[in-house]
Image (cartoon, rainbow, N blue to C red):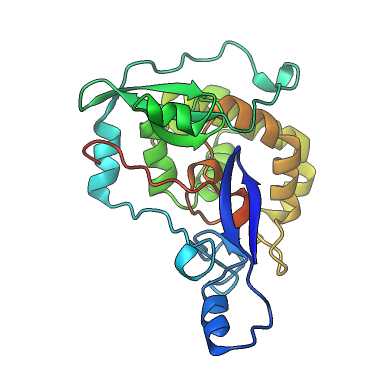
Length: 272
C-alpha cells in the first residue's frame, strides 16, 4: 500500500510493507524495509535490524549519498558569500519562533563554481527553477552553510563530542563556543549549538546527569529520557535558529529517527 506522508516541509512517497507478507516476493520487499533511519554505533542502543541508513521498501528505498574525505573537503573549500552574523542574545530568552510554511526550503545558489549563497525559498520547485540546489527543508539559519553540512555528514555521532564540549566548559560559554567550533562548525553555528547545550543543561540537567553513559535509545526505539527532554525543551528553538538539522538534510546519524521525519536529498553540488 502506498502512503503519502508530510516530511520536514516536503512531501515524499513512502511505502508501507505488510508485517506478515504472504509470498516470497513480499518477503523480499519486507526485508528491505526499516522502521528507523540512522547510522547506529556503540552508543545508539539499537542494531542494524532496528535502524539503518535506508528509508522505504525495495526499489523505492532512499539512502543518503556516501561521503568521503575528498567530498567533505570539497564542501569545506566552497565559499559562502552571505555567512550569517553572530547573535547578540540568547535565542532561548526570546519569544517562541513562529513556524515557517511546511513547503519552505533552504537552497544553495552558486555564483561561479566555488562560491554560493544560502537562500530561503517558498518551495523546492521554486528553488530548482531558479537554479538553486535544495540543501535542507525549512528556512535557512545559522547552520545552513555547506561547511556545516560537512560537519553533519562527516560526524555521524555529534551527540558524544557536543556533550563532551559541554562537560569540559561548564560555566564558560566562550569556551563552549570555541570547543564546538573545533568540531568544524562555522562561528554562527557553533554559537547556536552552544546556546542549545546550555539551555538543555539548565532545563534537563537533573534528567541527563544519570544518563551520561546510557544508550541514546530505549529497546523499543524511543529516545532515552535525556535526549527526549532535549528534543522537547530545546528542539523547536534550535531547529528554527540553526536551520539545518540531520533529519531535514537527509543525513543518517547515531540517533535513529522514523523515516517519516527524514527528507530525501541528494546534495549534488558543483565539484562535490
